[in-house]
Length: 269
Length: 276
Image (cartoon, rainbow over all chains, first blue to last red):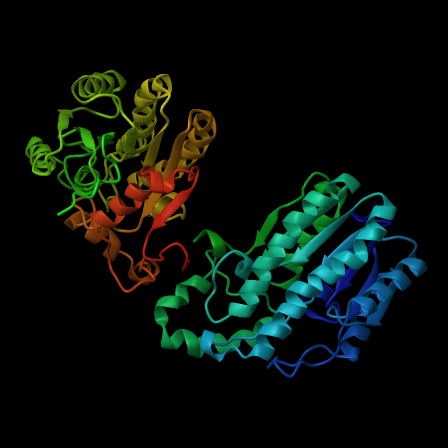
C-alpha cells in the first residue's frame, strides 16, 4: 500500500531528536524523503542539554532503516543563509519540496523578573525568527513544486498565557500570527499553512521543564493551568507526528490556517 | 455645581431578569447615567431551580431604586420563554417611555444540582438562558431597525460560555451549553445587525455575588469536588465579583464609549478564563 505522503519530500528543523526526529520517522514511514537540519549545539541560556551531532546521526539511521532517503545538515535556524543553503542542497539532491515542519525550538523556565535579555533574545530568535527564516527559505521551493504544506510547531503556550514562560509564550503566540498571514499570502500557490499546539511532550526539552514545579509551589493558584483534561501528564512525540502527518498529507488538502491542538484537552479546561 | 451629563442621557434600556442580582444592578447603573428602564422579570419559581428565584417584591425594589435616581421605569412581570407575553411587556414599556436604544438579555437560571435532579432541568435552562435570549433580542429588533438610530445589545453569557465548566448534571450541562449558545447568537446578530448600526456583544462573568450564586445549593455544588475548588479559583485574589462590576462593563459596551465595539466576548472574570 502506498504511504500517505509517498513521493513527497519534507524539510524538518530541529530534527536531531525529540519531536523533530519523530516527525522525520513518521513521515518516512509513510513514504516521504527527508531534509533534516539541527543546530546540534548547546545554548548558554538553556539549562537542559541540546541535541548533538550523534543525535542527528541517529535520525539519519532511523530514516534510512525505513528505506527512505535523508539529507541531514547541521544548521542554525537563526542563520537565514545557512538555512537557505541547507534547503537548496536538499532539494537539489531529492528533487523537490512538498512539506515543511518548522519545529526547532528552545524553552526556558523562569519567573518574569528572572528573564534575562539573553534568554529573551535567544528564545525569540529561535522560536519565532527561526520559524520565519524556515518559511522564507522553503516557500520558493513549494511554489516551484505547485503547492505544499507548512506545519509550524506552536504550543498550548501559543494559545494560553502560561506563567513562567514569558519569552516562550510570546514566541509561540507570534508563530500563530505568522502562520495566519502566510496561510493567506501563500494560498494562491496551493500552499497550506497550519500550526500544531502540543501540550507537554515527553522529549528532552519537555523533561527540561521540571523547573516549573518549584515555581508552581510558590503560587499554587497557577498550577491548574498546566493540567490536561485527559488523564495523561505528557503526550508522546508520535502523537504530534500523527497530527503533522495528517496536515502534511493530501487528506488535509483543504485544511489551512488552523490551530491544531494535540493537547489532551489542556486548552478546553 | 455643574451638572455632568450622564453617558446615557435620553436613552431607554430594555432589561430582562431585572428584579434583583445583575439585572437590578444594570438597571440602577444605567439609570445613574441617565437612562430610563423597561424592566421585566418572571418573579416566579421554576420547579427545577433549587434556589429561590426573584419575587414581585424584588421587582418593586428595583422600581424604587431607579425612581430614587429620578429616572422613569416601566416594570412588568414577564417570562422570557413566552414570546407573546414578552412582546406585550416590551410594547407597553415603549408606549410609556419611548423607543428602546439598549437591550440587556440578562435573565438566566443555574439549575445545577447534586443527587436528586428534575429531568426537566436541561430543557428549562435551555429555554430560559438560550431561547429566552433569542426571544428578547427578536422582540426588540424590529422597532430598533425601523427607527434607524442604531443601538446596543448585550447578551449575558458566563465563563461557562467559554470553558467547559458547570459539572455533569443535566442542569449544569444545559447551563454550559446555553451560555456557549449565547455566544453563537451574539456573533450572528453582530453580523446581521451591523448594517443597522446595532452593536451586539456578550459579557462573561465569573461568579457574581447574587442570589443565583450565593445560595446553599450552589455552594454544595462548588464544594462537592475538592479538586474543582482550586480550578474554579479566579486569578485575581477575589472569590467573587460584585454585580456592579458587570454593570460597569455593560455601561461601557452600550455607551458611545464603545461605539465601534461589536461582536466581542468580554470576560469580567478576575482572570478566570486566562488562567485556564
